[in-house]
Amino acid sequence: MLGFDAGTARKVWTAFLLALLFFIIYIASTTVLVVVFAVFFSYLIYPMVALVERVRPRRVPRVASIAFVFVVVVALIAVVGSVFGVELQSQATRLVTQLPALLRTDVPDRLPLPHFLEPLRERIIDFVRSQIETGSDKAVPLARSLGLGVVHAASNLIYLVLIPILSFLLIKDGENMREAFLALLNRPHRMLWSEIIDDLNVLLSKYVRALLFLSLATLLCYGVAFSLLGLPYAFLLAVSAGLLEFVPFAGPLAAVAITLVVAVFSGYPHLLWLVIFIGLYRLFQDYVLNPYLMSEGVEVSPFLVIVGLLAGDQLGGVAGIFLAVPVIATLKIVIGRARVFYAASHEQGEAARCALTGQTDDET
Image (tube, rainbow, N blue to C red; front, side, top):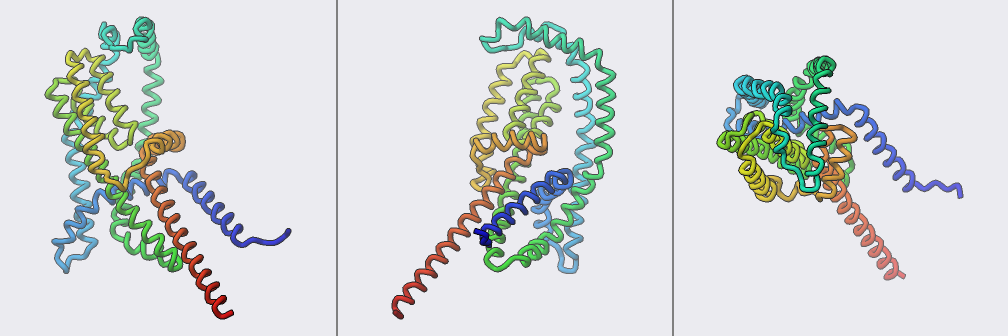
């Protein structure tokens, strides 16, 4: 009755360590998030580092080539921000300034609603307008809250500096860190985790670069189409859609909703053409471009994606939504590899026992 089962103890100890690990990650969520963004940034930069490595003279150290790539990328980001940031800020300021006035006009009367909501149109419009009028009384508290938010964000600018620094160190010492981790494991588990790390490397490289290409494609296509269609605030809406593309599932839906709301309340006359374009583009991206870029390694069940997005929103807000899909895909890889590994180990153990039993019977 008081016997000690070593196998059960190991399982309990493993479960305790996993729970402790998740607790530590939750407590140090900000640090973990910075590291995760650094990893993602590393995967974006690494193809350029590999390209420079091919033409690097032997006498030039590898650190110099990595530093050169980082300097070029940071300078490019700064130039793009300085060139387009002014126009982006101008359109955002103009939209915030003009939207309350637009909402007080007859534009909301032309807002398309489902048939079953038509009897409630006047109540809905009155409610929206009352909220706008009430909001004008709260302008000062809102401005104060916004100012505090800006100060809080400015205090966290150190993380924006840490992300490229950590990315530089990851690219520089990534292989040594991998070997040091694998050296801590015994031979069978070393093979298992080596395969898991290789799969995760492929997964994250495809996922991060696919998100970048999808974001750039959305920014370019929306920007060109919105400009040709004469949509107000075209550049602002295109940039917003491109950034929201990094948030799986919920981001593109939010971008479509924001675009249509701004178009309606701005009195845009070609709303039908806008809806047709957005519908055709989403079909192309969701069923052609996205599967081609993501490939099979990043496929996750839609049910798990929705559940993961809801859980990520509760645990980490926007950051949790952003990380939901890669975390689920990572767990899928780890569980799949572990299941194959332990199934193979069990089969080998059974075969060894059968061979030993057969040898004993022959000797008898």
